[in-house]
Image 1 (tube, one colour):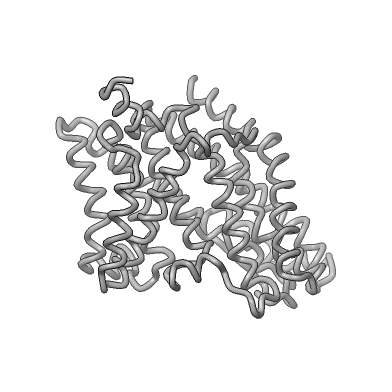
Image 2 (cartoon, helix red, strand yellow):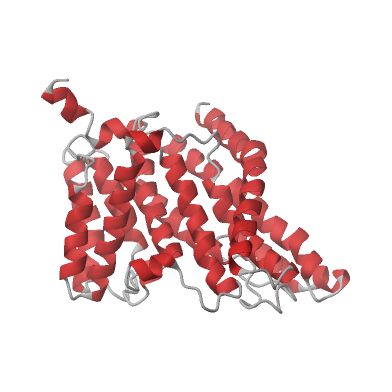
Length: 356
């Protein structure tokens, strides 16, 4: 193999092509990690601790790490989709039909099936309660509601129906800002340079407290680090022909995280380290050999919290490990038909509409 060919097969653009990565498996493992991390506050977990929290010396639990990786990978793949097919109508339709159908279905299932099943109210009172319909109305409009009347009142994590949904509005906001930035620079000869500066600004400005309190809340690490992770993924894709997929990026981010005393920067670099390390893992030959038939990660993520709350409501005395296994298995079992019967047809419908 020539040196030029070897280098070509190491750059990100090569690994972003279908068949040259196993990002579907990475996403699925991240979704399972969210369920694992949520089990500690949602079930009886005294005497046990999130392994990720221990390994990271308190920097992150498994759920926070998985969500940051989701945003990094989303920035990577969604930006690649936009660059490969810069059709604005197609981009909007594709994103809508990828996110909304399964999201709305899980919201309705939680409110109209799980809710009346487990509520402490009578069915009549439950469906007559304004909170039931407010939950649906607000959540499908991305003003995420967490409470249904009388639902999960006796759980450890009381009343919250599906706590994982809070990330969906941030995801859609990231898509919107990416598209807006692309359109704004569309006719510029320096589009790549301008977009690069914008993405770098999203990453760097918070470190220096520029815009804190106006565009983000730096003290809230759960939300303030989502945009930088998405921006890093987008930045990588923007320079996909020059970025080599190797361990040099994760090791550099890890070094900065270890050396810095700035708490915000330490967390950011830690998430950058993990995200780029997972990226490298997803491109290895060994990892690519593990094939999954359906991309069920989004479904597992959407169902996970709701399943966990329901399982604890019905079987509160399960051992933590049994609870984790049950919840992961049930979430996967629900995600498979959700993908086959809803997500995949919706994606195909979106493609047909975009091509008209």
